Image (tube, rainbow, N blue to C red):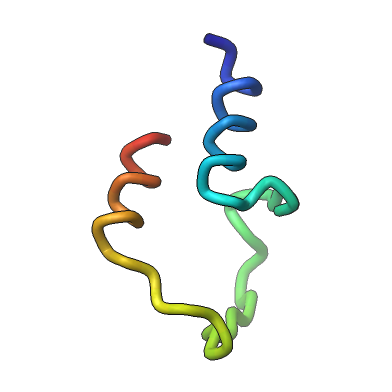
Length: 53
């Protein structure tokens, strides 16, 4: 399976297909704010997503 297809399917599965790419590593001193208006993520689901990468 090609990576682009695999990632596309993974993003659909976790409902993140509208997300945009970001260069990594990020610029130094980038301020990241905590999302307070989103649902909490189930740690098990988070581990599954990371494991899929």
